[in-house]
Image (cartoon, rainbow, N blue to C red; front, side, top):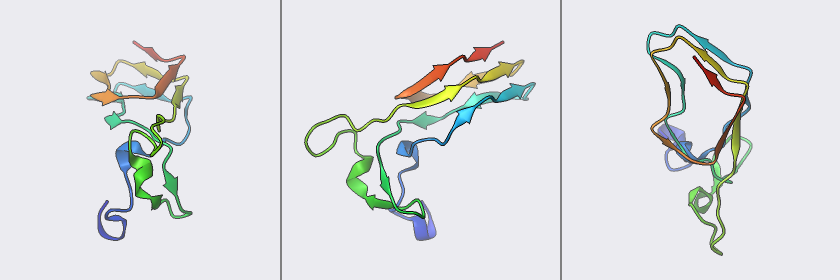
Length: 99
């Protein structure tokens, strides 16, 4: 993060909101593009800032997996040049269609 958010966020590990019932049609480049995402059980305050930076880690202090599954539901990509991601984990695609 920048400014007030510096050191107080971990964007690649913050869970998504709801991603449901989207249509991406005839984009010049990308339809769905999630980049590098590994959602975790991050602890945040009401402003979205971290309350415990260690919750951005892959594992909890006692060694448990800290990932949280996020879902992309009923996504439809039509006639885009590219769709996809570079690297991600703990993402479930439910009823995803790309033509």
